[in-house]
Length: 143
Image (tube, rainbow, N blue to C red; front, side, top):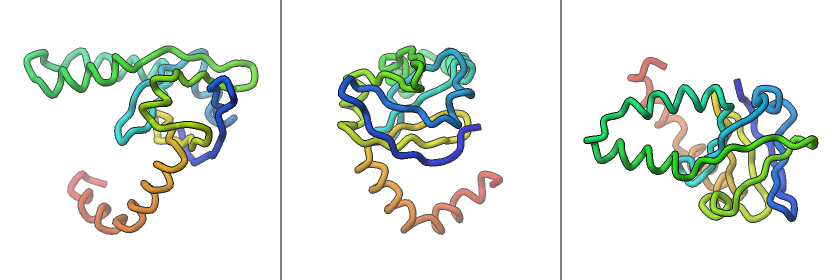
């Protein structure tokens, strides 16, 4: 399980260091793609396989399903950790997420999210202001 929040900077080649606590869980490879809220999703290959199977079962006749599958798959690419524990963030994904230099790498249970510093800090500030309300609204989900 991925937990925690870490701040890192991209190097001149667009590589991002993945926190040591996350590296072993990523194993031999991972998939990175556009995520929701203009962040990037980084999945261990095993988690991506689970998600892929679920997405393949969505009906082709549903427009929302087609759009969501296109969104995730068209932005997806394989990535591997180098010997220093870094991954290459493709230019198109950096542009999508607005990541220039500084990024937050956060653990979200079965995936890692990569955020631009500015977007993450804005998100956290807004979420903190409405956390109690959010908690009340999700009580119906069995949490």
